[in-house]
Length: 389
Image (cartoon, rainbow, N blue to C red; front, side, top):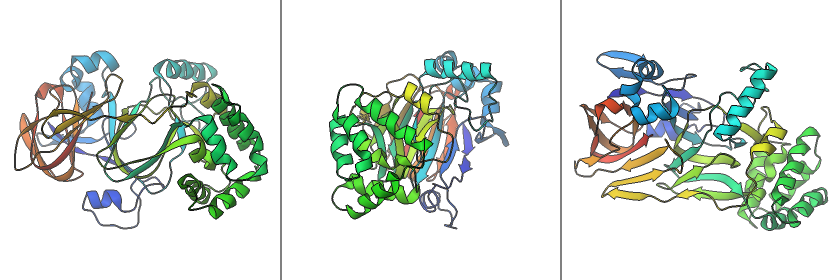
């Protein structure tokens, strides 16, 4: 078992208080958006054990079967199949969508053939991997996820009473399987021009605050991203609020955006993020339209499976992506996932993780438990989140 020092990412959308309070660090006004706990080559955690500190990706590469186990090694090769993060947002992240494995492989190969450099800002596919995601709320966590029924979206857009949006309303009221595809196509193409209606929609949403929560979010996004047509996203996508302890799965092809709050995110270790709005970065309109699933559906909340008293599991409907929550009380020993690569993060109280040796964790601290260490237990008086493959 290895103590992990996570990689801190200070993106502008990060919170200036949430992670700092979790880690019991001074609040100095600087944002912390993410703390990466994994072996991502761009910023691997540093793993400590036996008096030595080594980047986790190097440990995995040196002993892949011992670190990962045969199932994970067969499925994804000699690399940690997921990246676990503490994520804390004080403002919205971009509207984005991720590809399936087949789409990622084809898109990566096409850009390689065209000679698009991996560090080109206009590059769309950074690797050959899909990027399903699982998020577990530590605080109230607000997000947009998946498309609404088009008739519902039409009613919400109509409440803005902006004549320039009549074509969008018409596309949505047309209904049928292509209604949301047509609506998103229209909206994304607005990025090619200076859309005068954006300011009018922002003012209308401001004046309607209190009428509908979705319009309040439109107003908030207009303040955070002036002039961006993506401010209409809350009217096209489902608006959700996770309470602490709830979890959500985001499948490839699902448009989504995190708005605020702190969570543990477990995702496939990929950089394939296709942005659709609320961003100054590259938006590949054609590819976003090609990989998005336009089927209206309810948000994919995950139902907790109670394994034993004090242990619940949230398993995504894909191989290699799972999260367990272990909550020991009064010093009891509770089982965690029995094999494979595991990242354990304390999120409340104080816990001890036993697997070969014993490590004591306070909030925000983490360990990596390799497959070779076998079964693990968690004791103490607190809560640990365990990412597993």
